[in-house]
Image (tube, rainbow, N blue to C red; front, side, top):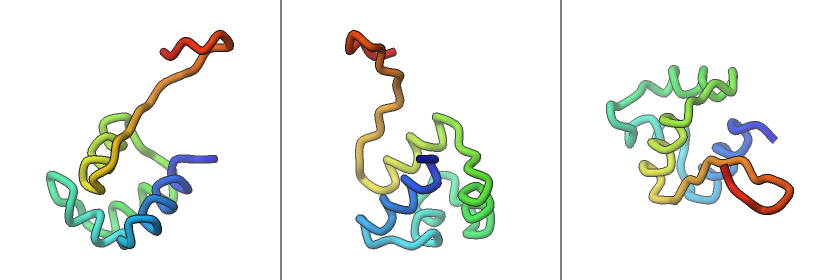
Length: 71
């Protein structure tokens, strides 16, 4: 599952629109720019952390090895 789908699920869970999210980001982003990023599924780790902060949730980006270790 791509991050765009996860972000859209987050927006539904938080009862937010793409425009609401764009306005809460710092610096404020346009709805069009956010929609383009969602379409391209083009997010950096920094973007994802900022989205989480704007939505008031926790974001953890990591790889989990077979033995349970997280990288």
